[in-house]
Length: 80
Image 1 (spheres, rainbow, N blue to C red):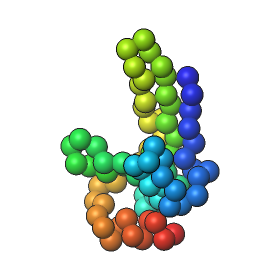
Image 2: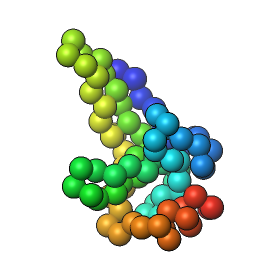
Image 3: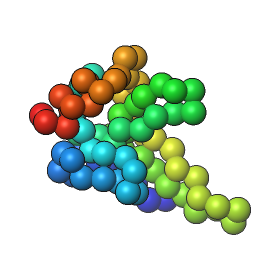
Protein backbone atom coordinates (compact mmCIF):
# COMPACT_ATOMS: atom_id res chain seq x y z
CA UNK A 1 0.00 0.00 0.00
CA UNK A 2 1.19 3.49 -0.83
CA UNK A 3 -0.01 6.66 0.89
CA UNK A 4 0.10 10.23 -0.38
CA UNK A 5 0.07 13.15 2.04
CA UNK A 6 -1.28 16.22 0.25
CA UNK A 7 -0.80 18.46 3.30
CA UNK A 8 2.85 18.93 2.33
CA UNK A 9 2.26 20.04 -1.27
CA UNK A 10 2.23 23.73 -2.24
CA UNK A 11 -1.15 25.40 -2.70
CA UNK A 12 -2.04 25.72 -6.37
CA UNK A 13 -0.21 22.60 -7.56
CA UNK A 14 -2.22 19.86 -9.27
CA UNK A 15 -2.52 16.21 -8.23
CA UNK A 16 -3.06 13.77 -11.10
CA UNK A 17 -3.36 16.80 -13.36
CA UNK A 18 -6.94 17.40 -12.18
CA UNK A 19 -7.21 18.10 -8.47
CA UNK A 20 -5.87 21.43 -7.18
CA UNK A 21 -4.18 21.66 -3.80
CA UNK A 22 -6.08 24.17 -1.68
CA UNK A 23 -6.26 25.33 1.92
CA UNK A 24 -9.23 23.39 3.29
CA UNK A 25 -11.93 25.79 4.48
CA UNK A 26 -13.03 23.26 7.12
CA UNK A 27 -9.73 22.56 8.91
CA UNK A 28 -7.23 24.96 7.25
CA UNK A 29 -4.82 22.16 6.25
CA UNK A 30 -3.80 21.67 2.63
CA UNK A 31 -5.53 19.02 0.57
CA UNK A 32 -6.61 17.94 -2.91
CA UNK A 33 -10.02 19.28 -3.88
CA UNK A 34 -12.28 16.77 -5.60
CA UNK A 35 -15.89 16.59 -6.66
CA UNK A 36 -17.78 13.38 -6.00
CA UNK A 37 -20.24 11.76 -8.42
CA UNK A 38 -23.03 13.06 -6.17
CA UNK A 39 -21.89 16.63 -6.84
CA UNK A 40 -20.58 17.11 -3.30
CA UNK A 41 -17.04 18.41 -2.70
CA UNK A 42 -14.35 17.09 -0.39
CA UNK A 43 -10.79 18.01 0.45
CA UNK A 44 -8.56 14.94 0.66
CA UNK A 45 -5.56 15.36 2.97
CA UNK A 46 -4.17 11.79 2.82
CA UNK A 47 -5.09 8.94 0.50
CA UNK A 48 -3.99 5.32 0.19
CA UNK A 49 -3.50 3.39 -3.05
CA UNK A 50 -3.39 -0.38 -3.48
CA UNK A 51 -2.74 -2.27 -6.69
CA UNK A 52 -4.98 -5.27 -7.27
CA UNK A 53 -5.00 -7.74 -10.16
CA UNK A 54 -8.00 -5.93 -11.69
CA UNK A 55 -6.79 -2.35 -11.18
CA UNK A 56 -5.90 0.21 -8.54
CA UNK A 57 -8.00 1.07 -5.51
CA UNK A 58 -7.60 4.62 -4.17
CA UNK A 59 -9.30 5.57 -0.91
CA UNK A 60 -9.11 8.74 1.16
CA UNK A 61 -7.67 8.10 4.62
CA UNK A 62 -8.14 11.65 5.91
CA UNK A 63 -10.54 14.13 4.35
CA UNK A 64 -13.11 16.85 5.06
CA UNK A 65 -16.55 16.94 3.48
CA UNK A 66 -17.29 20.45 2.22
CA UNK A 67 -21.00 21.16 2.64
CA UNK A 68 -21.07 24.28 0.47
CA UNK A 69 -18.31 24.92 -2.00
CA UNK A 70 -18.44 27.20 -5.03
CA UNK A 71 -16.31 29.56 -7.10
CA UNK A 72 -15.90 32.11 -4.29
CA UNK A 73 -14.70 29.43 -1.86
CA UNK A 74 -12.34 28.01 -4.47
CA UNK A 75 -10.81 31.42 -5.11
CA UNK A 76 -10.30 32.03 -1.40
CA UNK A 77 -8.88 28.54 -0.78
CA UNK A 78 -6.36 28.89 -3.61
CA UNK A 79 -5.15 32.28 -2.42
CA UNK A 80 -4.59 31.27 1.22
